[in-house]
Image 1 (cartoon, one colour):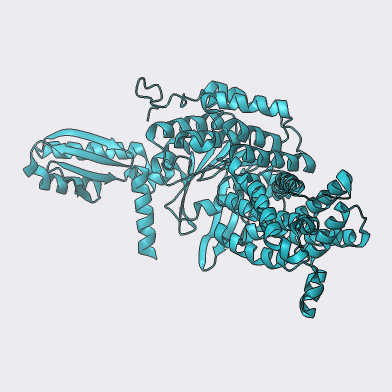
Image 2 (cartoon, chains in turn brown, cyan):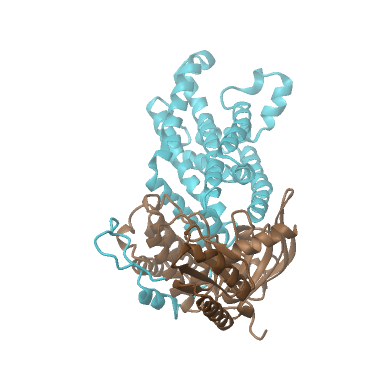
Length: 323
Length: 286
């Protein structure tokens, strides 16, 4: 690796009593990217982020942020990172402006500069009208925004977003995504934890899937999807009575189990395609030709990539079987 | 997926205008990082936060206004006749003492404030800032200093109305209040420690009461320790609150009790060093 990694951890461990919340996590995050950490509640995502943000001391292993050790060089790390937690990390009793001015002052801005910066950010985040209101009166979407605004008062090198859209309505969620994209476009590295697969799919370039404190899969979105097959084919037949035969044909042609949908004319099959989309398309085309040859009429057909939901379920299932 | 932020008409929340990516980008690039704030500047900024909290939640001043007035009136008229023959006599002895007792009692709200903050996300934000570590804690205490001064002013005013006449004049009174504020600032580190150590606001309150009641009542605030049993005298005469109450009482009466002042400052230094360092250890470990 030629460039310095934004985040590098080796065997990171955190133990709470009997619970190994984080149990040997290895991560390598390239700068300037969005790195998604995906996992269910209690998987160890937040604990990992808190260690990287110097809020928790690791019980084992080591972690570096842009080459700085999070324990030995915690102060230097704090100068590089910002954290937006699961709960609004601003003072609810204070107004939007007061919160941003307070934090800007703590980041070293002189009073007039702090005020200017606060006003600019409130404006850019569409919060000008709410600037004089106490944050406790903000809606969920507004809280998230003031929170992210607070995190970029000084453009951080690394921004931790811990479940930034949990509990938001779809519109606010899209707006948070837009903000994240704008921030990344300016060169900030983002580590995003989420339990929503579509969020990781939308934003992240690489994803680590964490469960029970361990990384159970890691790679680009494409790699993760390929690991459970390159795609899935979805068919609708004209005649319901042709479905059993179609199932046999598909199963033979694709060498995969075919799933019968609740709809009596629909079926879905995993296409492995030797891990490539092109391979999957060829395989699916051959299977369709075979169906036509047997006189089975297909009304509708689609070939898609597996969703991260399928990836996630496949990965956690596999682990469940192994354990 | 397309973003549907340009929806019209259905927006019930006009404040939620779409953030503008270009404006945002302009704000993020080419920004010069200012140098870190000094320890003093960071502490004062946290002190400013405490002021803002008072501005937004003025009810929290109840404990430094109504409570002290109640203390003065209650103890003066309850004990005055019995202990000193008349309330007029007693207030001369009692007022500096009850001032010390009330302000020292008020310090315990610091722990509750710290504890309440921890349960909210804002505390995490402060802890990830590259600033002088004790600044957040010092900030709480700077805000509290204002509360102590306010409580002192209220009590002295009420005292003067019902007959307290300090022979030390304004200078003596100011010196007394200054000593009390210094002691309270140092003593408060006990509460920041408990605020960080204990899990809930209720437990902080409970432990605080356990500490504060014996410490303030077992002193010479109300009566001369001469009539107490010997073992209790040993405790009372060596209590920091007794030293402080004596020093404040004599300063306000126009004397210069060097030994008592030295004892009060000595205890202050001890509290600051011991509980200040435990607090910071907990703060860093949390």
